[in-house]
Length: 232
Ligand SMILES: Nc1nc2c(ncn2[C@@H]2O[C@H](COP(=O)(O)OP(=O)(O)O)[C@@H](O)[C@H]2O)c(=O)[nH]1
Ligand SMILES: [Mg+2]
Image (cartoon, rainbow, N blue to C red):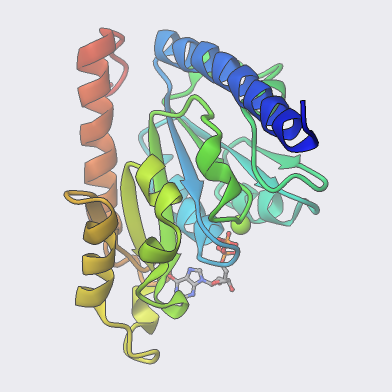
């Protein structure tokens, strides 16, 4: 076996192990009736701010919590804690993505039956997280107006593994001459038919549409699993 073949083999085994854990997590989430959403993007695209606003808006009528991944620091967990809901930071050290096992360990001691929604902010990276299923029901890929319109064309795998694209920092669009039509076209060229949201977590623009989509995806899943907790 060449060195290269061995490397590929080891990588395939790691991915397979991740899939097994992710599958069992997903089953646990479905049995508990907790709807799980993950967020991926490049560093600084606005995951934490979008998530903080989402948690604030949802917590009025729902039981929500979040896990947040970074290589180092508890900074994002501290920011998200301002929303007044349970938050746990996962620090990955040198690893550029979250794995299902990290999610499983972070949830030890949490009674997930008591949650309606669990959010998972992945490590800021548009490449590695694409290969790792976390057992989530909905994966959002975010990119901000300051990053340019062609992110989807440059990083197709992450757009292919996500369910919904979110264009963020809409309030800055004019200042950076962001071409919304070109961005939408870029998304559609990689994933025809992909649902796309356009938001500003700063002004709240587009957040109502996001919450509508979330509630509707959740009731679709409840119809499938038969575990109904929404609409309490
Ligand atoms: N103007 C504006 N700035 C934003 C918005 N969302 C995030 N930011 C800023 O962008 C920077 C990175 O945001 P953050 O949420 O930490 O991104 P993350 O690395 O993807 O979690 C911070 O300085 C935020 O205040 C937005 O909707 N509008
Ligand atoms: Mg963050």
